[in-house]
Amino acid sequence: MEEGVLLKWKADFGSTLGSCVILGASSAGKDGGAGAAPAVDCGESDETGSIPESFYTNGGLKLRVVWTISSLIAASARHYLLQPIIADHTTLESLDLTDADGQGVLTMDKWQLQELRVKPVSASGGSHRTLMPALSMRLWYAPHIELPGGLVLNGATLVAIKPTEEATRDTVGSGIAGSAGGCWVSDAFEEPYRTAVGMLLKRRTYSLEMNSF
Image (cartoon, rainbow, N blue to C red; front, side, top):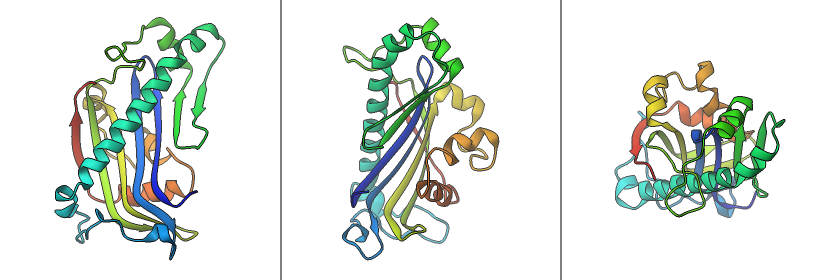
């Protein structure tokens, strides 16, 4: 992995977004390398895992919102383009589409594929991407994480996203690391990033909402 900003996402869709998990870091690299230098938005968190005040005032939160929106736009564009392919391959029972650089993964299971075939997709305005519904999000943040193998993530951020309508039933973030329903977050990525997710899930949770776009 190249040293520098880290951004990875995994999203699942039916006729619209089912869930999305985003893992980001303002810098990532081997311990002692150039990528391990502290990023300007890291700050110092207290013992409770609270996000430092500087995170809000120096653009740290704004950057995470940009990461989230760009990941959702990328995922929804891929989903929109897959419609005719899925319609033409009626025997397809699962789908995993991975970016060439491994940054993003879009998945669909048998039931989600069937849903897409029978329920038309809503496009976002005049753009060639699937409309995002209103979203409920949970955010976890750590200024510094050291992973096995010497990988260091500065300004590490985890975002778990579900449609607001579904989140009210499923409660995003409730027992997210341990329950079967929470595996979509804790198991979203391969190692060493799975370990990073587990470490972030132990920290304080912050809630955000996003309108449909």
